[in-house]
Image (cartoon, rainbow, N blue to C red; front, side, top):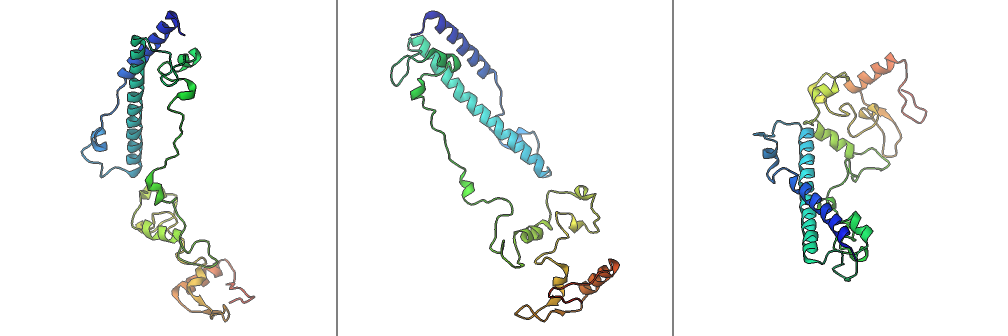
Length: 235
């Protein structure tokens, strides 16, 4: 059973906690656009919007946490006024004084605290959202197919959050090339796959002359190399 000095000490701690919680100020629960004081967020960089969204979510969470804590502190102060402080509401046994000193707003003993359950709930969005470059039907197959990376390249050419300034270190000739891996091949791996063919058994390699083939040959000449197509056949 707590003596009067211990109760007075814990009462002082609770009053100080209450004053601190009531003095905290957070953003009002209004739209993100209003919270940052801008007429429009249309022209903001997506990264800036993401930062503002994170900070706003953090403030709202802290506000909710403070409200919950303030309610617990008020209930503990009420228990002191009513003479029931320090006794577990469930088992009616005295709460360990060391526990009260660590958590002065608690009204439960360690065994009966209602906050023992750890939630494993996940956002419902995770049922349908995958990681970036999620696996597609043609990924990890022993052939060259249109895969997840190819689909990203097709979408990225219409614009991303990157700007031309992010590609100053690259030698680019077209604005449309200002996205990651813009020069990577789509649907194939080696450049010569554009102008060669085989029969259905993978034999009888044939070269089909084209501008791509001519450019490839010029590039090989510059490096003084031959075009190797496998099966000990050099063209």
